Amino acid sequence: MATTEPGDLRPAPGASASLVAGVARGGAANLIGAVIYGLSGFVLLIVLNRSLGVRAAGVVVVAIATFNIVTVMAGIGTSTGLVRAISHLRATNRAQDIPAAIHIALVPVAMLSLAVTAVLWVSAPQLAEIFASGTRADEVTGVLRTMVIFVPFATLHAVVVQATRGFDTMLPQVLIEKIGRSLSLPIVAGGAAALGMGPRGVGAAWAASNVPALALSSLSLYRRVQRAVAASGAPPTPATPIMRREFWAYTGPRAVAQSSNVIINWFDTVLVGAIMSTTAAGIYASGTRYLLPGLFAADALVQVISPRLSGLLAVGKRSEAASLVQVVGGWQVAVMWPIYLITLLFPTPLLTVFGPEVIQAKGALIALSIAMLISTPTGPAGAVILMAGRSRQAMIVTLIVLVVNIGGNLIFVPRYGLTAAGIVWGASIVVAAIIHTYQTNWSMGLRTIGRPAFLGVAISALTVGAVGVAARLTHGDDLVGLLATCSIGGVLYGAGLWIFRSPMHLDSWWSGIRRRSTPGPNDAALPAQGSV
Image (cartoon, rainbow, N blue to C red; front, side, top):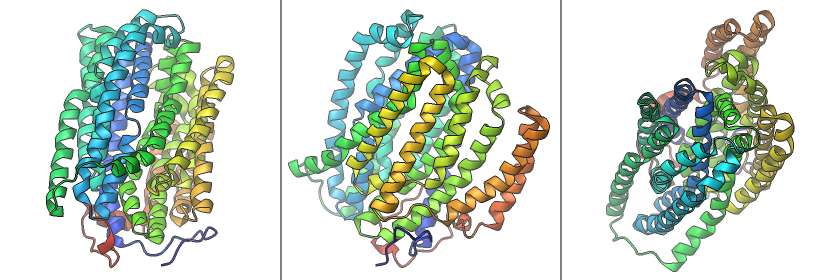
C-alpha cells in the first residue's frame, strides 16, 4: 500500500470518489448548520446588547462563559471518545459492543455533572467576586445559580448529540443543536428580556434550552444504536474491564485536552471580566464573535471527517486518509480565508453592528484574523492525531497551548486590555497549528497540507484580498469599502473557485451533495457511510 512520504506535498492517491462525496454530503449539511449556528450567535449578542444594555449583557456573557467551561469539563472527553469508539466498532464489525461503550461513557458523566452542579451552586458567590472584578457580583451570582441546575442536561446533551456522529451522520447535530437550539436562543433570550426578567431570566432561558435538546438527541442516539445492534445479528455485550480500560485510556487524556481547550476559548473573556469589568467582557465577547463563523465552518468539516478517518486508520488505509485530509483542508481554506481577509481589512463597520462601544475590540479582532489566516492552511491536523488514537499527544499539545494562553493573558491583559487578550488568543491558535502540523506531517508521516489548500489561499488573496486592499486604500475602514469587497471580491472569488473546481475537488463536493457518486473499489473495507 502506498503511503504519503513526509516530504511529498502532492495529494496522496487512493481516496475514492464516493468517500469524498460522502464527506461532501455531510460537510454541506454541517456547513449549513454552522452558518445558522453562527448567525444565531450574532443575533443573540445583538439582542443581549440592545435589550439589556452592554453592562447587563456582560453579566450574562460571563455567566455563559462559566457555564460552558464547567459543562465541557464535566463531559470528561467522552464526546470525542464515543465518536472514535462507535466508528471503530462499526468498522471492525463489533456493533454489538456499542451499547456497552455508551454505558461506560454516560454513567460517570451523569454523576460528575450532578456533583459539578452542587459545587457551582455553593461556590457561585466566590466565583462571581472573582469574575466580576468586585462589581455586579450579586447579579453574576444570581445568574449563575439560575443556570447551574441545567448543567447536567447540557453536559449529557453535548455528549449524546456528538456520539451520533459515530454513525457517519450529521443530521442529529445539525437539526437539534445547530439549527433547532441555536435558533431558539435569541428568541427565548429576547422574550425573557422583553418580559422584564433581566439577566437572571435571560440566563435561565438560555440554559433551559438544553432540556428539550437532550430529549431529542437521546432518542436519535437510541434509535441508531438499536438499528446497528440488530444489523450485527449478535446480542449486546455487557461492559467488560478490558472495554473500560481501552475506552478510558483514550478518553482520559482527551478529557484533559477538552477541558484545556474550553479554558483557552473562554478564559480570556472571564479574565477580562475579572481584571477590567463585566462590561469589558461583554464588549470583548461581542467583538471577537467574528472569529467564530470560520471556526464553526472548520469544525463542521472536521466533525464529518473524524469518524471516516477513524475507520480508514483502523483498517490501515493511511494513503486514503492523507488524501481525504488534504481535500478537506482545501475546503477549509476556501470557506475561511475570505472571511478573515474581510474581518482583517474592515473591522470597524463589522463591530458597529453590536453597538458603538464594541469598536474597542478592533485590535483583538485584527489579531485573531491574522492568526486564522496563518493557521487555516495547515488543515485538520488535530483531527488526524485524535482519530489515530494519539489522545495523549493531543493532550500534551493542548496543555502547552493552555500555558501560553493563561500566561499571556495574566501578563499582558492587565497592562494592555482587550487588544492583548486577542493577541494572546491568536498566538495560542498559531502555536497549536504549528505543533499539530509537525506531529502529523513529519512525526506521523501523514501529509495534511496539499494542493487544494495552496489553491484556496491563492484564489482568496487574488480576489477578495486584492479587492479588499484596493477598497481599503480608496475608502478606508468603512461600510462602502466593506460592501465593495463583499460584492466585487465575492463575484471574482466565485469565478476563481469555478475555474479551479476540479483540483480543489469542488466538483466532487457538488456531486456528493446531489448524491450522484458511485462506490469506489476501496470502499468495501470502509465503515458504512450513513446518509445525512
